[in-house]
Amino acid sequence: MDIKFIQQTASAEFYDAIATMKGVQVTNSSINLTSVNTRCFSDVTNSRFVQLVDGIDTADPTTNANLGSIIGIGELDIKAWNYFRALSALYGLNAFNGIMLMASKSPFDYQGLSLMTKVGFTNSEAGAQTQ
Image (cartoon, rainbow, N blue to C red; front, side, top):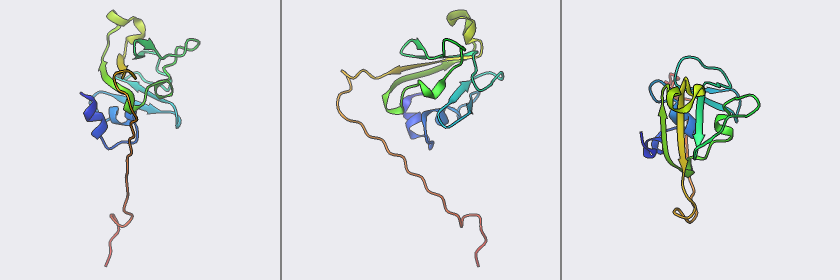
């Protein structure tokens, strides 16, 4: 999967686009907290899934809770994104369910201003029978 797929997905945020992939489960516990899982053991904090942003673990050090979208990077700033299932041999026991690796763009390589808008609409008469 590449970044263009995520940018072209009809979703409100990056984590909603990830949820469309096979084998990925995304849990929304509030408006700001979204956690990702790749194997069937899932909860709101999901301590068995590791999320690394530029090589830094985004888990809360006191509870080992994966904070997901609170500490993650924005969709415009993502340079590379990968996820793997069950890599505990390489990344430790916390990666039992999987790992998500994200790399951000360097501000020195990508200078300037970026703007992204997403528009959606709904038609309330689409399901109604009109005569």
